[in-house]
Length: 181
Length: 181
DNA sequence: CGGCGCATGTAACTTGTTACATGATTCC
DNA sequence: GGAATCATGTAACAAGTTACATGCGCCG
Image (cartoon, rainbow over all chains, first blue to last red; front, side, top):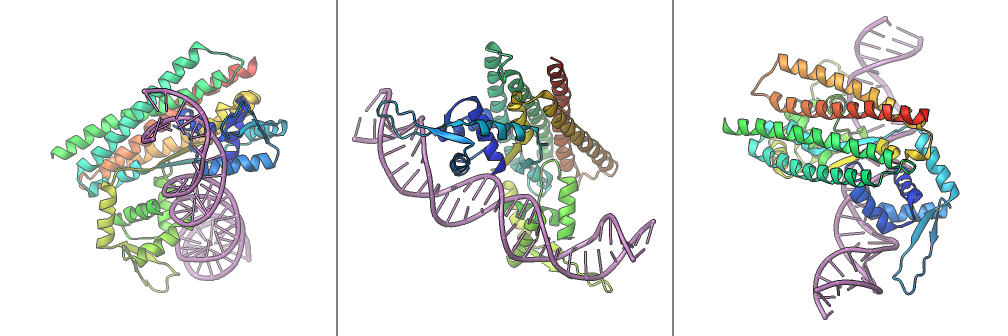
């Protein structure tokens, strides 16, 4: 869980959060390059806490529902900084759609067409969301926060998603021609 | 091992192969969108064989070294065709480099710069390899084989890798400006 | 008072990697 | 003769998902 550890430390370096909030942030802000499930977040939180890289802070506001908010410790921040300087080692990419495209001559073209249209729609939405993030961030841009770095990440998402959409458009044309023959 | 199953069936639908050859093909041709380890290939081969989706053919040429060549069966081909028509369900992307970029304001810019340069070099090579594949395939283009579909897959790789390189260039400039301040 | 969203958690399972063992063949 | 590549395989481990259980608070 090396990697999960550091996503969590990273997010906690910005603000205190609950496990649930961490999951939500990853699902929204990181969706085009990362994902985590509760099955990893909660055990990792427990582990980080046992190693004193994070601490549970009990914000007993009135009679709030059960809620564990975590904050990063000094050693957590140190560990995060160290990790940031270690060379990137894993780059996991598994695109089932390309596997299907590669072997798609074995089935009728209409089937592949459906897959691509679905793919295209999903990434159109992703791109719109990124454009929104970008505009929002630019209106409150603070050079002393991590905003410029976040904009670079958003830019990555925009470029890659644009490439996906260009490819989808061309591939749909290709399949439509195939289908007619 | 759902997915591993189908990569193998797909490759065996083109030619008979050994486990070792399957691994090599995935490492070279699919490297920008897929990966498999021996730890998955060999057990999956065994399992597919037990289910009669593939068959072991013993090509006892002279006193060849131990070698198991597999070929797809009719039911294997049927299973593959069915899978090709089922909607794409998984799209795994985990880019550690973006995670590091996102939180990189916590460390000095030079560190991130190294990561990006390494990333850029790796993807320059990938792009060159794809350009080579493309040229090779276009010289022997056969519309009745899967060549047009493979070219679409290569095109995906080229577009996405080009996006990676554009982003790298811009991000290196960004970090160099940061570093000087 | 019903449903949704917030919130936590785990057990069972699937998936995937790593490290290791083994040994033949090919090429320099 | 030694290195690289071909070739097969597994055990231990690490990572990740899914399905489920639980229950509060808020809004209509």
